[in-house]
Image (cartoon, rainbow, N blue to C red):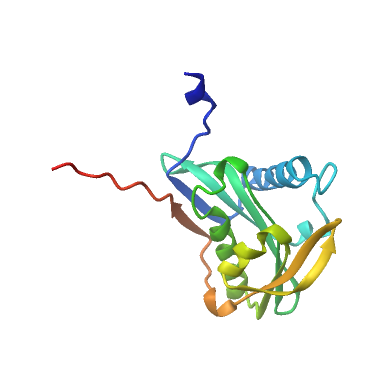
Length: 183
């Protein structure tokens, strides 16, 4: 029985949205600390910086009975200069990676939201191991850089693949296995 109790809860439904409540913002920052400080060791105690003052946080939350329950994904966007938007601090909780498209949906929401707010370019500094993932999502590497002692790529999203929208949230349903009927 211990094996069952050790398995993480895997929801069927996630909501991806602009963080609008106090608990969503707190969960956004807590998840970033978990990933960038504890898991990766990029920062010592906290990853917050001056960008957080103006950034728009976006979260992914697993849902229970259709209601957001726990923050399992985070990213932030901000306008660096007129028409130039940036995304940063993309994080997905370890228990929810590879379960679906949480990271991809956070990126889509980030870029489409910025595009709807007037982005003519959208850039991100992507850790080297994540470059193939971003390329599959129609991003192009503009070159390599080193940040916090780690190799990164400056990458640009193909805005033609991310239509502008003003939606505050989207839903993500985890694909379910097809049940075979026996004859």
